[in-house]
Amino acid sequence: MTIEDFSFSFQPHKDGLGRLLGELEARIMERLWESGNASVRQVHSALSEDGKIAYTTVMTVMTRLAEKGLLERQKDGKSYVYAPSVNREQFAAAASGRIFSALLEDWGTPALSAFVDSVESTDPDRMAELARLIQEKRKS
Image 1 (cartoon, one colour):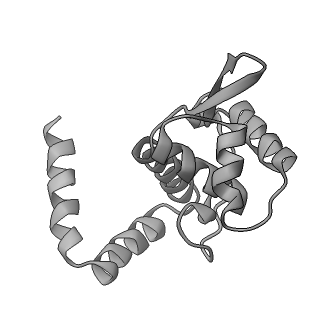
Image 2 (image 1 turned 120 degrees about the vertical axis):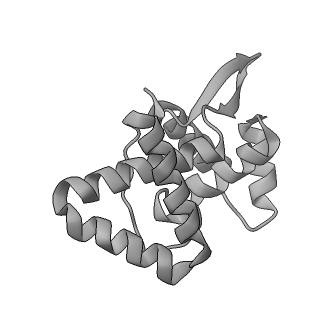
């Protein structure tokens, strides 16, 4: 399974990774993006500092993230070491691309117009960046 195959639901009312992943999935991915790789025990230890969480819960979620293609795992003795299969930027690009493609497919011009309006109202300086990206695409 690849990042393109990963299923998620977009939840715009949440923040950050929580818009695409469950709360614990997001915390685990953030931890692994920071550390590069870790065992379930290491991730559990890091997450337990914030509050009580069962080791088996962390293990189950990490196993599912591996099955979904977001984590890779390698056997290390009797346990596994997990590492992200993509970096944060690759994940963001793949997820954004899928969301925008779906919106454009379903809504076309209104979705495109709303995107441009959103860029302008959120960060007007990004309009110049958007124009530059369009010009680059037209050249290639």
